[in-house]
Image 1: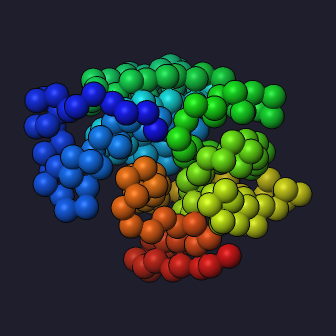
Image 2 (image 1 turned 90 degrees about the vertical axis):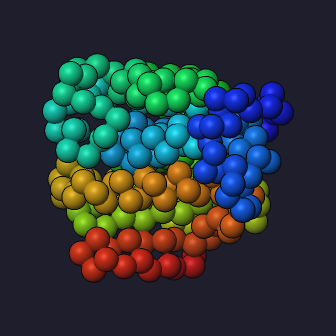
Image 3 (image 1 turned 180 degrees about the vertical axis):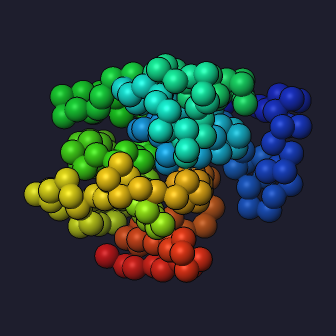
Amino acid sequence: MASEPPLSPEETRRYARHLVLKGMGGAGQQKLKAARVLVVGAGGLGSPSIAYLTAAGIGHLSIADPDNVSLSNLQRQILHDSAGIGRGKAESAGDFVQALNPHVQLRLIAEPILAGNAETILAGHDLVLDGTDNLATRNVVATAAEKLGMPLVSGAVSMFSGQVSVFAPHLGGPRHAALYPDDASADALPSCEANGILSPVTGIIGALMAMEAIKLITGIGTPLIGRLLIYDGKGGGFTELAY
């Protein structure tokens, strides 16, 4: 991560609760400001991830999503609103970011991430968050992240539950294929369209994804590398599995 100029007086007031937080402080906030983060998908998981990364003060945020906002998205995709139906999700998310925190530098990518462009899109970032519901896209992003030596924060949700993990083979963790084999069918990733999803579940998992990203950037705590954190909304509990 590149160095950034000192925090401005306005930024000092904006991030005051971080600056007094033991373990974060000014050094941690500077790391957030210097970080370059890519979020793939501005939907159910991308929305809370983007919102909290923006609020936390990520300096450079890229948002990739080729889709448009639809009415059925609004039940859970909190970056978007009724007036934005039909707009590109990346553009809509960008407006949210700029309104919340003008200190965040934005890059909007309104094109699908494919095997042919994934490395180019991911290059130059410090880490990537993937909350898409398409296993093919997830595999492409994971392959590119691994090749570039970039941590990947991955989340998934279905019905009343969700899960989050961090893939970082370059740091000694297992590969993405340990959880999602390369030959797995699309059915291995539950579809919200087919099975439904309770809206707050996406908020919980998306917020956890943002938390993992902040931990990786600042060095605070222990990231979920080689660990799968599973949330059960009905039971109100978490389970952790090693893999």
